[in-house]
Image 1 (cartoon, rainbow, N blue to C red):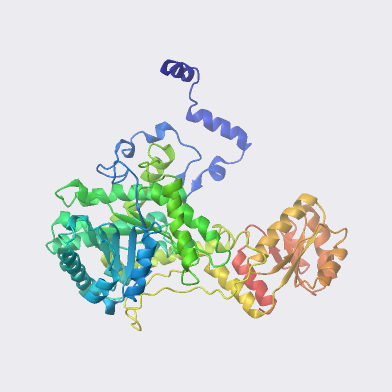
Image 2: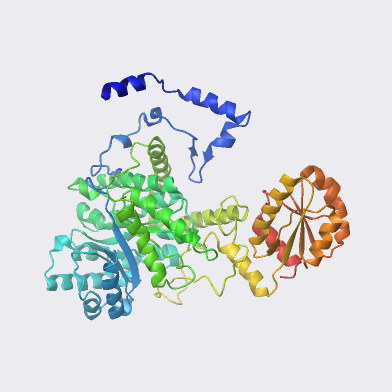
Length: 617
């Protein structure tokens, strides 16, 4: 068999890069290769349309093995298993306990409890963990950072009381004062000083981490992948350095840090991000000279980002979170939280939470993604992406270190300014449809209404009514501007009717009518498409009979010179007149009084806001 295989492949010569490029050039028929096929990412580097074995020359990542330094291929050698985590409120200990016991029978093996600061008591924890075998499930706790030490002492006392093997208790406390600075602008100097005591309280529990890097907050504010990773490294290194300077042994300090990353919808880039994250963090920790390489492992809890979720057409969120969770588990993370599809507009119910759990269980039980370690390894594309992301993220990390570290940059507001600028750019790109949001700014559901939905803001409840001392990040979701626009139309009580006056060239009028329907439906307008009219007069009459507020002329560029002015004059301001396209005769049409044109270069959001104003909405 091997001889036949060798003979078969010897008959085929692998094409060179230049041969591929020559073939592509022929197929492009003179079009610019770089403009048509090379993708300039938001992360600051180019992605080629194809990669070859030679692209891996000089890269160190393919030489790594799973479970070995620098852990680019993951922390495990024999499997790719991860924890299926579900978070819940735990203000009512008995209710949270009952829910935890229930969902553990439904596939969850990692619990996340959010405990109000005033409920951090031994009695509350006793009730909360009643009946839960604490060395058989991962336990994660979130409370106000100023209460973390007290919570740690209560947990240690509980575990010791129950006689658990300390080496088998797996979990974490989400102590991350700097997140409160970034998100809420709070001064956390005093809280940061408790880090050493917190770590030492839990030093006998090797699998229980207590220092968190909640870079998911940046992901939910629109940070690019390299920004999220670069700041995560600087953030984690700040904590590591603080602990070591406070007298904590480097190995212990490193083993107590846990990273909570967001997951975007960019599938292959996310796989590469987590691989690059482990690679870079291992190199950082190594500089502290830990006692063992295992201290260099990055522990990652990955959370599907709310930034990409939508209130309208919300079931599309299931597709987004499924793609996100797939990229994370294939990249070999420690645990995953799938955000329920309805989480941005209501408290998730039993149905949405069950679906969120099952999304991960499908990946495990049916797709068997937990069986193969680092399946992306060796892929020319993924290996190259890993190195490209690592290089860009490392630049951000070094920039923070050269500017006195992450903490100093947060105090100065530099980190917040950068993330807010990125978020603003992404919202602008979404407004121009440079970034697509299926069901929001592209292919919206024409007939959907909000049905009382309203976006909600999730707050922890602590530090209420305190003015921020530092700048904060703006975490408006990518779809929020379009949702506000659509809600404005709904609340006005008047749904504008947009009528497609299709005429002339069949292919062009159909294409432009479809484009215009999608464009105008983004604001919740009622759109009426048509098969075509013999004359513009007939089309205008039909539009008025349909009580149209907007008449959109859909034809070819060449025919607009013939049809636009007669249609505009016949309509005679009885409705808003719009031309679908940007024809060469646009200036001539504008001289005739035609003001409104929609095309692929239009700012969809601003254009629709202008139409609302003209329609009195």
